[in-house]
Length: 429
Ligand code: UD1
Image 1 (spheres, rainbow, N blue to C red):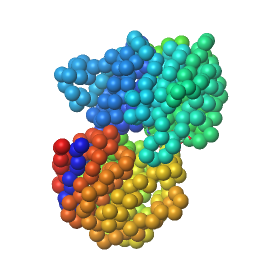
Image 2 (image 1 turned 135 degrees about the horizontal axis):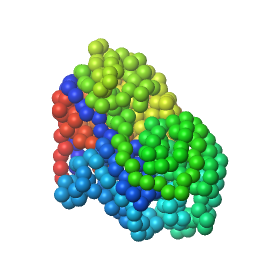
Image 3 (image 1 turned 60 degrees about the horizontal axis):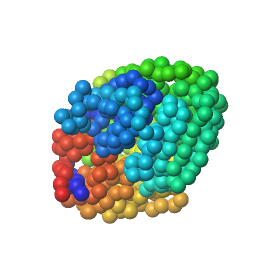
């Protein structure tokens, strides 16, 4: 298995181009199942999760091409992908595929709406918590689906098609909002979804669905109205920039010092994060083409954060921010409110010399003057990159194991950082 080797201490200077968002690309790709026309997505990032979802969609019969060429001719480095789900060959999403990536469970919405029946393996738990799908299933039941769970599979079907309804999510869920939004586009009549996720990725999906002929209003607010249509057509849409990648690199620059322009970064995607970074003492300069992060002072000021759904501070940047706070001049408190078990990185950061104590859902971080390189290992995607951030500032060599987590969500991470002066390389095995 590959590892990432970092020798810390270098300041970052230069330009980092921001990729399309993984969390926007995945639901957009799944939306291809709603139509027998071609859905074209631009700026799809080259990531392991995207490749896996392509395999999952292929299992259902979805044909795809990259910039008009087949996969074996170009690899996955082309950024525009055309999907064609004209022939659905199976509505079963098997365990061996769904268990590898939770978001693949979301095929349940479009397949049920278009074909009327679907069997999807339950996704199971993951490192950051139990992550149930109960609200997704309740929402589909509200739209008239009959749902049975047998042998680890959710079997959903509708005899006369889905019917519009009102459904209130008991808790804000991004995946739940994506699934119900997709399902309701082909339901008969009007649907009102309440307490919906306001994340920019939901807006990206709703914009795409509207271009395909759906009638959706209110995406980006906590109430979405959908008037069902009988069929959807093809469309073309660009994946929005990855706000988690933007925030991660902004924190890496703040951690190491330096001056980096994040090209293509849209400040409106992460206002709460930029506000927090300013409080740490970093200069954040917003412009039309991106965001410049410039470190002027010598020290990082401690700042308390609490994760929230959008527009609050994202849970997907909590680990990275904790990495940053390990070097702050003082004590900070980091409270996780979205997932119950998202502090797996604490122990690994401690191996680098960080001083962190946990009490319930709050971590207290006492900043230290120096971190020291070590061998570390991560259990999830965002936790791994927090170790990279810490490694960039640590003295000596840090080796991050289980790099496949990073490859799931960060496109060409080591290349982007080394171009800005970081001493970072992939060690292949
Ligand atoms: C998405 C993101 C993930 C991010 C998360 C929260 C993608 C591919 N993944 O994950 O990176 O960390 O949003 O911003 O976009 N819940 C239930 N029942 C349900 C559904 C959710 O209890 O039926 C709970 C979850 O356990 C969790 C909370 O709701 O505590 C939020 O989860 P959710 O927003 O659904 O996360 P995902 O969509 O899986």
